[in-house]
Each structure stands twice: as structure tokens, then as C-alpha cells.
Length: 131
Figure (cartoon, rainbow, N blue to C red):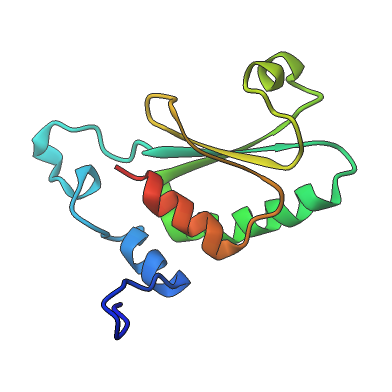
């Protein structure tokens, strides 16, 4: 959607429409089965790094849970408690919880944020991270 000065205004509805699980922009998920490309493979993985008794983690989990159905199989979702994987948390330099990491299919980090995100912030980050 454009505004009078020619800039593009992103809204939650426009981002969800663009990311929609039943279509979206042209890309691998729209290729016919005979193309030989593996279908239904998540393009991104969203990992919530959390900790026990973390109220902010609960809020972040609720935000991610609300978004997950909008993206279908394009995004894989997981949650890791830092106490359950301290070595991996240290390797990834998880300094606070909640921390949300978005990685691509190769495992490369595409986005990282600590704190409680809004729905619009998560959707904007996912839109920017998609190939």
C-alpha cells in the first residue's frame, strides 16, 4: 500500500497477505510438483529462547503462537529453554530471555531480537528474512 508521499506503508494485513500460506509472492513454494524442488520444507525457523519463570517469555510465546497458523509450513517454530541447552545458548550468545532467532534453511541467522516483540515486528522481520 502506498501513501501520498510515495513511500510504502506495511501493515499487519498487508504483510500477512504477502506471506500467506496459500500463495504469497512467486518463489519455491509455488513451483509445481514436477519441478523437482522439495515442497513443504520450511524456509525459515523461528526459535524462541526462553527461561523458566520468565513473564516476558510467556508474552513472546503468545505472540508467536498467534502468528504461526498464518504462515503454514513456510516457517518452523521451536522453543528452547536456556537451562536445557546451556552450551548451545552460549555458542549463540543468548544473553537475555526472551530472545527470538530467525534462521534460514541453511541455518544462517537472518534476524535476532531480545525482548517482547509485537505481531507487526515479527511479521516484518519474517517478511524481510524470506528469500
